[in-house]
Amino acid sequence: MNPNYKRLRVGLAGLGLEVYWAQFDGLEKRLLGYLSEVELKIASPARIICNVGLVDTPKKAIEAAHFFRCNDIDLLLVYVTTYALSSTVLPLALRAGVPVIILNLQAAAAIDYESFNQLGSGTEMTGEWLAHCSACPVPEIANVFRRLDIPFHQVTGVLHNDPVCWTHVEEWLRAAEVAHDLAHARLGLMGHYYSGMLDVATDLTQVSGRFGVHIEMIEVDELTSLRREIKEDSIQEKLREFSEFFDLGDECPEGEVKRAAVSAVALDQLVSIKDVDMLAYYYKGTGIPENESTMSSIILGASMLTGRGIPVAGEYEIKNVIAMKILDLLGVGGSFTEYYAMDYTADCILMGHDGPCHIGIAQGKIKVRPMKVYHGKVGYGLSVEMSVKQGPVTLLSIVEDKRHGFMLLVAEGESVPGTILEIGNTNSHYKFPLGARGFVEQWNSHGPAHHCAIGTGHVASQIDKLARLLRLNCVRVC
Image (tube, rainbow, N blue to C red; front, side, top):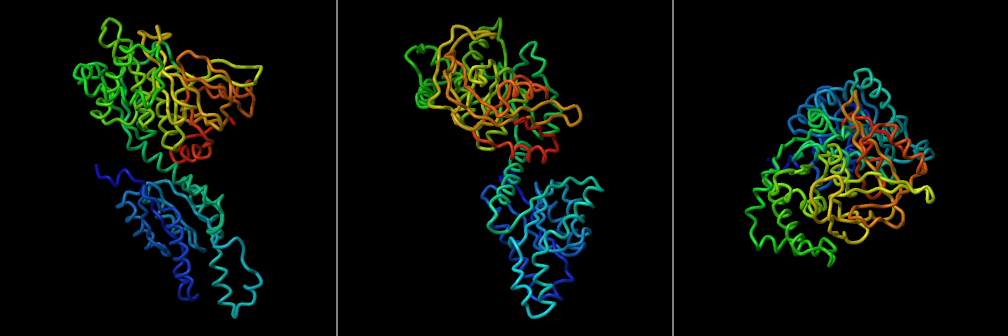
């Protein structure tokens, strides 16, 4: 694959009106300078910026639109530098066929009225006015886009010294990067659904169609087969990694740690062979002891993969592994969780889950505990236990939507101190602005599956932008 496809390709066009350039000396050069400043502000090693300069006639718009199509852009930023005709911007949106962000960025926070009124001539005054005229054509552009059902989004602010404005621009770009990465991602599915969890089941066509994710079906037998061929030196290297990654207590039997290491090495190989970016699994292995041993020893290896940006979700949770991937791409972790109890005395909610966790959001080192039984599952072995870092957190659930395939359900809260249950699960105490009762009722009212993803920090604003780029609904509970 061309490595450039791994980078977000951003189309950038400045809007202007050609007739002005001969009338107002220096205006075109000035506006081109502003456009260059925008390019510098959005530049990143992870992005390719395709800047076509000032588009000031319908003919140039068509040429620019074909240039954008040839360069396979993922997002189009239209910087309105001064008044421009809607007929100039329409070809860009029609032919580019990607999400459009209108940048309504004024050159300064306000016109210097006193200096303006002391300019030498009316022509000079008009040229100066036009350099501050970015807001003027935006209603015209919005009118045309709405009438033609062309989705668009806006950022309104100032070119310089406006951190709120540029935070929004960066959030749009980060959201576009997440959408781009999802569209190039490969999701491995290994095993089958956990029997009876009807909320977890989903439509794979919708998964691929709405997120662009490729689905790779994987047999558990493939992982078991790889385990048979693992060499002793690879096992010892994985054991060294375990000692760095986990807090392995003396109560963990040496044989179980080694069994987990064999599965972890095999899992690394499987992920590499299948070239997957995320994995959802569940398999009983009943009646075939070797497969049971494989699947009951997968948690440590799956946690290590999750920690390095390849999220692994148990219980065949397809929707939730995508939610985990989204949070990880946003840089806030993405660990598998569910709420399982409420503390009415402290007005908080206990959340956690068995299975893989994310080291990037752990409060301290992840502990490993031996389990004589995996509740509700076949087998026994090692499990992981951690709490999420105390501070701001974001919950994300991908929920079926009859009209749009899916919607994104999000909530912001706080991970707070509290005694955790030492049962070999990830678990933490959380508080939400709605209170425990209010949060649970509001969250449930939207019909999510009982699992969700947890990340550190508050990123609901970025998730909302991602939903808009994907043309999905986003509901924020708090």
